Amino acid sequence: MSLTIRQVVNRLRKYNPVDVHEAMRCIKLPFQFIGEGSFRTVYSIGDLPIVIKFPTGEDGETIEENIEHSANEMDAINQVFERKECSHIRPYVPIMYYYNKNTGVILSRKYKQTGLHINHRFCKAAAEEIKDAFQKNLDIYKNFSVNDDGDVVLIDWGVLGDLTDWTQSEF
Image (spheres, rainbow, N blue to C red):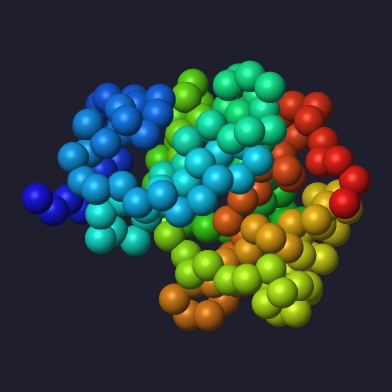
């Protein structure tokens, strides 16, 4: 069976899965583990150019904290599109297809993964622009990927949002 991205989004909206097992049952495509960050676990879905993020990382003391990280990510992305002074960093925003504020599940475009060494070399200007726009001094280099055109994209905006009082520890 093959689905379109739109069909995957429709199934997510209909069933509102909270974890990978529920999502696999409702989408009925193979999931491939990509990685785990501090607050979320990420999977690709079938042959589609998408990833799904579940708030199940190890840093959150509760599932609510992990869900808050997704809320912070969406808050930061919304700020980029709402604040005129952030318009220059819009090219760094990933394509987002779905977000459930109650479960923290996010579906976005899948981007080519790059190594941390490459990110420090090629993403320095982008990282500085983003940190300046949000007036935050954060280590966001590990969160960059590349789109099909070779442009850098920040794939995790969770540390930049302002919905919760969570802050990144010193690096």
